[in-house]
Length: 285
Ligand code: NAP
Image: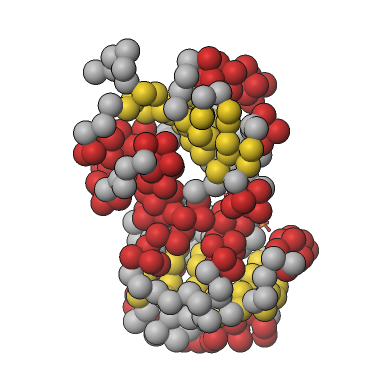
């Protein structure tokens, strides 16, 4: 029960009805037995400033931020953590007595299953498919972990080049961009130790689509990661598995970013497995 002592958390977005965060966070809160409550906060874009002031007035301990507020909220905060500043988006706000600090826990979420599975990133060659919003956290996570090279494969090289140019001053890693289907793309597929899909290709309901990968070029030793979490196994992952590659879907990234946020707010080490279960249960409803 939410009593006068309960500390409040939530997720703001518009629309917010389909967010998996309330189920996932509430599961972790109950598992940890802490007196917190996490709710969905529908916030229309033009009411963002009022909503932030309102949550401050209500003494919320913190909240997650999702589409369309991840960039728009940044000027309303007192401080921005390094990951969020580099990525250019905030997904977690911490309220320290009225002083608001913005974080981006997508980087930790992306890295979580790689660390759990002992995948060596330092010195590895990575290939990222897509260069949109989520690719920024994936790219920064790999660069921060001292990857040796990253190739961004995209359908529109201008967007990929803009992203690479933005990050090039922050890394010693080789950073290159190629178009799907090009010779450079085929070379990057053959060289990849870590291959990550950040495009929405293969996501429910279009489950038969997939990014263009010639699997015979990919080494069976490569680790293949799709950040999509519905379906649980995309066509991309199925084909990687059939090639003999170890695979990872996006559930652990989603749970990992949520766990990192909950840890920031409460100081506890949340149980990520129960957060993954809650996500899967929600998706099966
Ligand atoms: P986004 O900003 O729209 O970026 C999508 C990227 O995919 C862009 O580079 C886009 O290329 C490319 N793309 C889209 N359709 C394509 C196609 N038909 N052929 C080739 N490239 C295509 O989206 P996002 O926010 O990064 O999200 C991408 C996916 O990641 C979604 O499926 C989302 O659910 C998932 N995601 C998962 C997590 C997690 O925690 N697991 C977190 C965030 C996102 P253009 O720029 O040329 O359009």
